[in-house]
Length: 287
Image 1 (cartoon, one colour):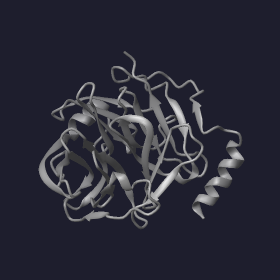
Image 2 (cartoon, rainbow, N blue to C red; image 1 turned 135 degrees about the horizontal axis):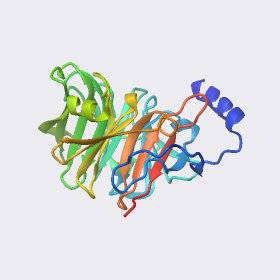
Image 3 (cartoon, helix red, strand yellow; image 1 turned 180 degrees about the horizontal axis):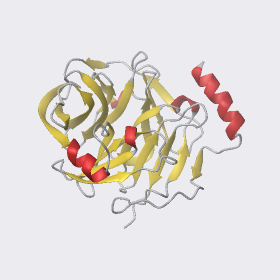
């Protein structure tokens, strides 16, 4: 019913809008990370099934296929940006799914309670995915939205949005080593200094709630989204906060996913609502 209402509303207010469009507004210029202009994206509106698009990922950085999930149905979607239709495969029942990563031969899905679902990449194009492993109780109790997989090291990084263990003004992260059978083993941890985020971003206490993360392989910097206060946080390879960039709420309605392709272009996905479709914003790399 929700998707039907969304479709009707979108048709009434946005009839004739193409699936792939360049941003035609003229938002005020904002400070951006080196190599990008956060004021000038290429905007791709999503199919109604991805109104609540959350995580996005590429395999080996190849932008010919984008893989995504949304936070209600246990499905993985795959498509080429700009195409009108998407393909989908079911991997689990409905649930609050927040991020997706691809690590060599496996797809990893993060549920908000910290449960991971892994399955072979070669099953993605099956209507019903089999051989799904459900990895429970591998993370402390809390709410999780951000995950990244390093295909060179087979390591998975998960960043907590809000955890009971985070009592010392830090946001905790956890590292896992992906095994050949799709299971994972703990491989350390990391943390983000929330106080540094607040100081650089000029925000009050409680403003940092990470919703996605990705590694910029061109600079070895970590890019972290905080949807609640519309900010992009950049850290060095050792997780030291370098800068905080405000995101224009006109462009970034609800930033929930982030990825880079092998041309160093930056992609950020935004959830939609009853009026606006979900979208993916692409920022070409500027040398």
